[in-house]
Image 1: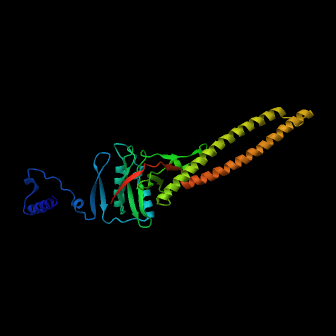
Image 2 (image 1 turned 120 degrees about the horizontal axis):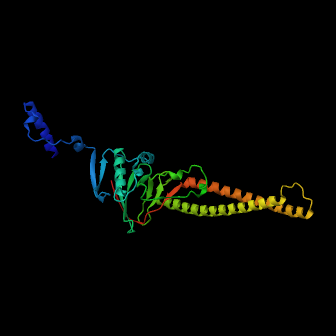
Length: 312
């Protein structure tokens, strides 16, 4: 068909030269496609046996001049690409759509990419599609850019829940490094927190999050207890001030002794509360520092991986 189309173009040109015009044709010829789209030697399409949300097959557009990126080049591309900003909607735009789009966008940007299909041992999850890149300096990298609605980030904002300061976890990216290993759960870490790509890093990262959550829960419990103690102390101070009644001197020795004893007890309690408050502030600073290191949210893992198919 392509050769025939080219032949028709040549024939029409010859006929026009001989004096014929288009008015001699009783039927309008169909508009010919741009030959560049059919004869580009640097691009080839590859259809995969996986369906997208609309039912059509995944189609990879590969560029022969695309090359493996460095880690920094990959992260720069992911930060500039907006595929992850599309919402995940069942029946409209699902993981296969995301993985196909990111693949084709990367290839068009000159970055060699792969479409990856992961199978799980859970019947509820079935399979999942993501991408892979073979970086020149850090090896194979799995990337999941599936947008909001597929997974929801788990955010822990208790440290600042009563604060008006800006909390970066309210604005999150869905670009994630995926940790894929057969026989293990498929883990996700946000791209700016994935300092290593081996599976041990994900295990360590998840363990640190678990420890952080336990300490944060303990901290919040201690803060609630401290606040109750402060409220009780304030109540006792007000009762003492009411008993003093604004007097600067007390003539009754018995009353003076009783009020002096209450005063000394309140001052001692105040010192105890100051020590507890300082300890809590130190814990808060340490938790905030760790929160900054871990990120303001984490992604729940998917099920145990049973099979991984990578298509370049």
